[in-house]
Image (cartoon, rainbow, N blue to C red; front, side, top):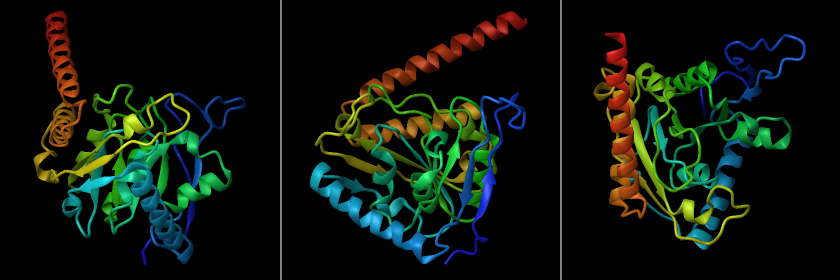
Length: 273
């Protein structure tokens, strides 16, 4: 069992500039209960039973094939960075692993009720999308420091075309401050199974590849942009390994973004000269 403290209520930070205590505040704080991994039989049973149930669905309906499981460490913290193709992605990542995973999930899932309870019991914690969320980053770092596996979707949103997009700036903060390796993961086929905008999933084959870890000491000395580039390159490389039909488009998108970044840097230097 875990050495975590008893379940406790956690209040996330409000976005910068918003006062959650002010009357009529448009953006309230997010309240959830940090329960800890393996802190009781309910948590363990929910995770194990849920995993077995989802394994059956994965095999019967999506013919899921998973490779690279040996790249996940048996103990100790690791930051899993995964491309985001569909709503299927979170549970696909964990069904083949012996260890539990902690998920950074969008704040709209934490609106109370039984659904929030299930997310809390399966190690999820909220993050505000579209803005820097220092509370979510601190929580991710704390769980990595406890020796947990923490998964984030570094693109911050689901893909609209199957390609791998830019990496969110907050990823570099977590990478620098947590003394944990980064493990890139790529899911292929989930976009075809359940693309953004489709109400229900359809039967398609899905593959998942756990990549080799990027040691922390290879990333800690890099700039935020360099960390984002390294992670994105590794994920695109995994897409090519899976022979994804989106791999070439991901590479072209990456090269275009790099060219655009260099142009912005030139303009910025000219303006400051």
